[in-house]
Length: 113
Image: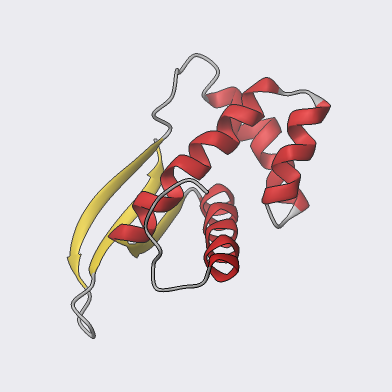
């Protein structure tokens, strides 16, 4: 597992949530969620983009085992990863946007740079 935050969930629920957040972020390029979730999904997305930069079949299969949609994995390897070919990490940005009205949870936007 990447981080140490438990996010109030069991390990399998947490893994499923991180997989879905990663897939959504790679699909849309931007995601609004709580700050803690954004900080947890950040290293996962960085690792997926690094796999996309490798570009071989083994890396594609490893990414596909984590990403829940096959077309998002194709997009990662054909569009997103070549865009970051010259960049050595730091593919995502987390920006705090204030608190949520209902429960005062701190919200953030995580986006691809």
